Image 1 (cartoon, each protein chain N blue to C red):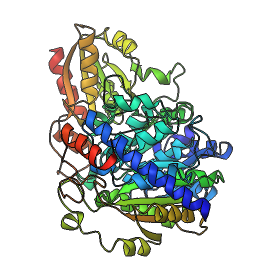
Image 2: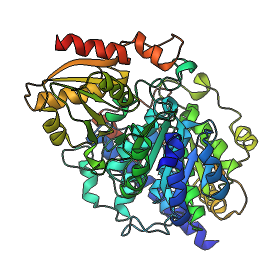
Image 3: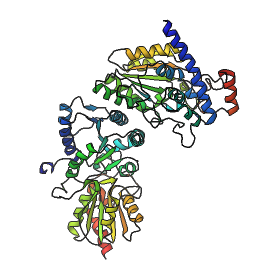
Amino acid sequence: MQKNSELFKKLSEKSLWVRKETLKIAKIVPIRLASSLSDVEIFAALYYGKILKINPRNLKWKQRDRFIISKPHGAISLYPILADLGFFDKGELARVGQKGSFLGGIPDASVPGFETVNGALGHGLGLACGVALALKKKNSHSKVFVLSGDGELNEGAVWEAIMFASHHRLDNLILIIDNNKISMLDYCKNIIDLTPLEEKFRIFKWKVKTVNGHNIKEVYDSLKSLKEEKGNYPKVLIANTIKGKGVPQLENNPLCHIKSLKEDEIINVLKDYYEL
Amino acid sequence: MSSNQLKTMRDIFIDGVYEKMKKNKQIFFLSADFGAPALDKLRKDFKDRFINVGIAEQNLINIAAGLALENYIVYAFAIAPFMTMRTYEQIRQNLSISSQINPVNVNLIGVGTGLSYDLSGPSHHCLEDISIMRLLPNFIVFSPSDGKLVDEFVDYSIRIKKPKYLRFDSKPLPLLYDEIQDLNLENGFYELKKGKKICLVSTGYMTHTALRVAKKINDIGIVDAFILKPLNEKLLFKTLAKYDYVITIEEGFINNGGLDSLISKILHDNQSNVKLINRLGINDKHIFDLGERDYLHKLNNCDKESIIKIIRDINE
């Protein structure tokens, strides 16, 4: 128990650091900042909590867990983590989007640590089903994690994959939904109301868990237990999050996806909330 | 090979893949609920490596790409227009873009190209696929005219780790390459008949029309283009340079990136005096007319008689 409370303390500190570093990137180049702030605790639990089995020195290690990020525009916050863990040099973080850099505004498979190309939404889960099927065929113990947005669930191909995964009993597949409830132009509920989301997945024969996506203990514990859980079904973690979390101007602003902060605004946020 | 005389391209190809699957455990065969007589055996004998993904072509591509990222060789099978156009973004992102970084071996088999589903109407016609699939970087586009080429392509498809699009006619077609000894698949074309002055360059089903024309007009040449990307452009130009005039024939939209555009580009790049005098095919409209395939060709000026008339006009 003592050990876990130390872990959670570390994960919280890392989450704060990741938000700070992500804001510093937003200072250099326009990014989808709000989308990259709702999933920070998810990344922290997976990477610093060592739920993902990976090896920065061997990207194609056969025993690694596969992590397919279906909303890579919202994964700029993974850049600091990957640099911190040695996937690439930390100095690269100051060069995002610059000439000669490999860190773009939407990360893809050319970035060490990213498995696939996923800028167009709604493809990640289907790809992950293929990977999960392949791993089962090889009798591999590796798991396939997928991060998807909630707005992305509007895409029809996602539901083709949701049906496929349960029909083929892909129990090595864990979908994480960053349920930040905001799309590009409005709250998701005003565009296509996805509720009741849990029931939708249950009816499609998925195991469902819902957590507060900013409570690091809840996120960590549920991902760990879903990874370990044996069963004949795919699993989904619905992480209720706040789009723009950690930046008051963005939090829950229905237009935060397209709102960019001016440099001095970012400097003030860093000063006021991140002691920089 | 004579047993392939009355078989469809899909049956010949699937029989070939079936033989490979016996020895090579790395092969998966996926279908979007689309069948073929030869497939019945395959899905019965390789239950663990055959998957019917359902009527879900988008997911067909994504599953294929996912399996291939884990180093499986994947064949995906569907009706041609849905294989290419329902799924264009899946193909673009998860095969064309992705394979530039992580090469994969995915073979998309589209059946029913051109007007081979003549009676099913414009939703089932496939007149766009040559243009749109040729456009995609990292892709190989195979457009065979006969079963011998299809049979040859089985080994090639396993050997070359790239995404490929295989466009198959739905009807059984007579063999053209059965007696030919010097075929080099990777050149992408073959001069089926040497001639003078006028050369017909065709692909797929239309090569059979071109050969019927040649039976009436002796001295024309015939080039069958069966790999539309990539092909040996230098050698193709050398072949075409012997003629004065070239006519392209394709069962697809003309003037928009099809076979005609490919030939036009090759001639232009070589500052050739050879004139691409006519581009035959379907000109910027969908076809609601009913009737057999040759009748539909007649309405669109690309049946045997129309082509003979065009050639006689040039000769006069």
